[in-house]
Image (cartoon, rainbow, N blue to C red):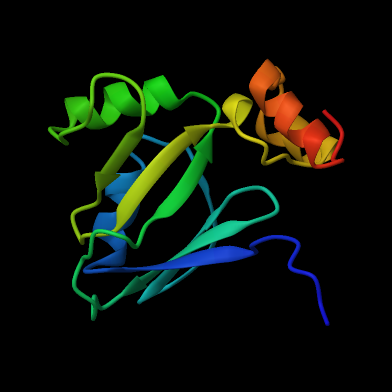
Length: 144
């Protein structure tokens, strides 16, 4: 039996790829991994998000993806300035214009880690995990 060790990518259905790239680019910096007329791939270092034109599913309350960023509060401020309704503090969850639910988490606060060389390329100034995140990693035998 194989052991699950991570996620390579998440695919999101959007109405229009160019509009989606513009919308997401208003609150996160990114580079494209690739682009076709109906697809785009947003690079996340050693992972990526795929955007696919042609929304076929209705939004629901449970389905979402968690996006790890280096500054959750900067995202909160940016999406609020875009007119997106968000809580003033705490959890940061909202929907894109196509109904995809996004939960934004700060890299420092979660047990998710990047390899040192990937993190150095993504956040040259460095990001230090909070004590709670280091404790969770230690409990799982994953360092900390």
